[in-house]
Length: 346
Image (tube, rainbow, N blue to C red; front, side, top):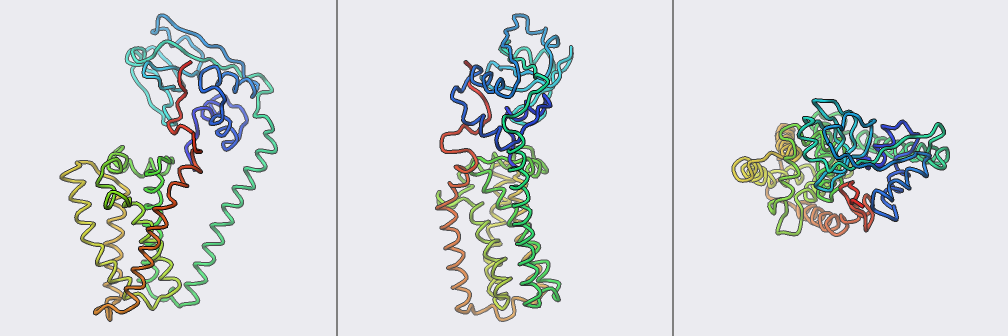
């Protein structure tokens, strides 16, 4: 699930009925990227607003929450509670808190207050809610259909009777999920589940590693795209052509030196840990032991024509992902949409 905009977060705090896709789209399409524009948007939902400036910023606890606070840096945050000692707020959807004195120092003193009317609601909420439910059912149906196809392929090729093929498929799925979340982060798409996973080893470590040049191969291909191509092609090959297990095992062994370089770089050069990157490296080693334990390396050397054909499929998948990965960013943010969720000051 994508991260909600500051506008949708505010509607949730105000307990105003709304749908995430429509409200986020309305926020992204605001004609005036300012407090005035945000105020007009809130009024269309039946919410009265009032902009104020507090000269004595220590009096923040007197303001009714939730309200939008304009920080001196230009960022907008949603204050959820303000006491004499601590201020709790949402920054880009993440709950945070700070000592009241520190928050006051960083606050510009400008705020936008919101007061929902009794009938406050998203315009056309019923139809939008129905569309959202149908979209959710569509997504559930898609995943169930894909799962059914995978189960069928397992049974049709007799893969369910071998422990190592079951584990290989599960690890490929895990690696595919981790690589997809890395591709999302590379495209600037942040999701709550990805942020939670990234914080397991080190908070913000994934973003720091992905911002380095080492996150790309030859300065063109992102390693996240390489991972997505590898796990995706490996899973499809296992399901469609299980006889190519020796070639899959050999290609997996060729990937292991990269895992050593990646872990070494994170530990000694970047001194930051990307949880999802480490998860991908661990998946490659788990696959290796499954291939080894299942005897899949038997007949893998010398490599047959299947090995080179499979390598070409990996390369084709990588080239296609690299060429069209920008579509993910456009679909999520729009061609001209800012991605940080902040609103410029008026």
